[in-house]
Length: 487
Image 1 (cartoon, rainbow, N blue to C red):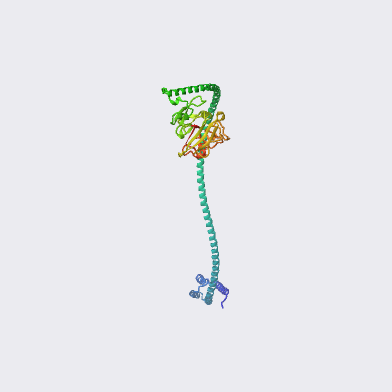
Image 2: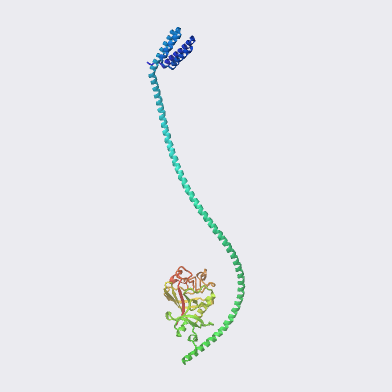
């Protein structure tokens, strides 16, 4: 059975207090050995106070007290004995308390250690949980940071691209601005020139109007003179025909008698009406001859084809190289243009006069750019006079340039760019170019624009013969020629 620790402590404190009181009493009794006893008593008190069992010091104290104060020897002895007893008691208590104190300290340490372990475990758990949460948060933060960095990189790239595009557009805008400045400057210059040209044209227009007025008056006077001359020419033509008949009779008489005129040419001696007369007179080589057309004041040079289909053909139109412009007006198509040795149009007035002499047939020779040749032939051909707009009359179509006729068989009026006589509101002569018997812009136009090889496809205004090469193929060469039906 263990003694209560508080009892030991109270006893221990009582003993120490008794010793203190006893020491104070002894000091007051002895003044002689005050200093010595003070030092010894003080040494013994310190030893007692510190709880150190020092018997040697107590014995020395006892001997000195006995030597200097014999009267106090018994009392001191008793005190010393009491002190020794107390020291022994203290040692006993300390010895008995060692194990219990060690057990108490051990229990306290264990309890404290267990508590600290629990606290540490709890802290470790909380720390682990917080660490896990912090790790999750850190992971989320890292992921978010990575996303933000990726977005920043994408935004940077987009910004760079946009900046690059802006720079390019800025450069283009600057270039366009420079071009606009140049164009504005040029437009201003052109406007100035245009104004000058307009002023010049206005002056020229006024001059031309005055000139046209004067020329109109002159033309009217010339027409009056022409009418008078035409009347006179009719009389002269009759006289000329009589003279020609006389000359012809004289030539025949001279031929029979073997007499030839010096420097005379048979071609000039005979009044040939057309190339058929020339051929029948013995001239069978193709070339240019002079013919005398009835009701015409002057002879006309024409090209005679003596090779095709028996010869005797009078050529009224020829196209071969595009050297002659066929985009002409009514008067030029009336009187003819070009050279009989090359490209030319005989003239509607001459064609009317020739076909009025007797019945004629028409032959049209065609060639494409691949060298293919074809022809169309009509058994009857003649045209009306100018009042009838040189209307075309045809009958009997044959040939290799299509099963159908590309000329209007029922008749059509002649049209030019300044005389619209067709049956279309679109003015065929302006749209298809040239002068022709268009009707309603029909399937043919041998007086259209001349296109060279490679450019002759898809041309509606070219030299076309629909039933030979189609409506948009421009031919290489054409020849229109006439010959009497009874040749």
